Length: 87
Image 1 (cartoon, rainbow, N blue to C red):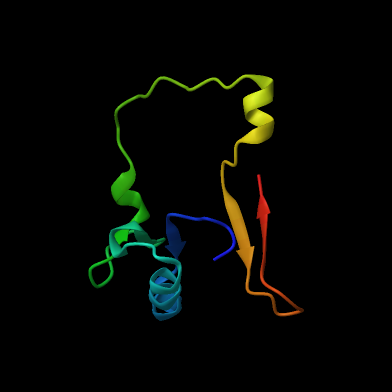
Image 2 (cartoon, rainbow, N blue to C red):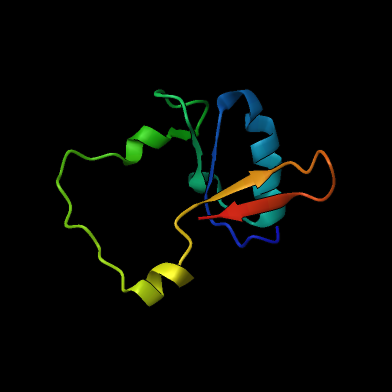
């Protein structure tokens, strides 16, 4: 809730937790993906986003690269409050 995330990628074994988190954080079901190769229930596989089309790389300035978050891994907070690590 404190990260501002707009997409969740999760293993299907914990999809129920992801569904509850999505509702709580206002993330639409179509922005919840499973890591498996196949879709699960009505959740699409992260691989559905892949394309064989070659894309032009996006180059960021050094300043932009320092300020933009590429991805965030989140911990459940087993030893305290939940926390995320940005890269």
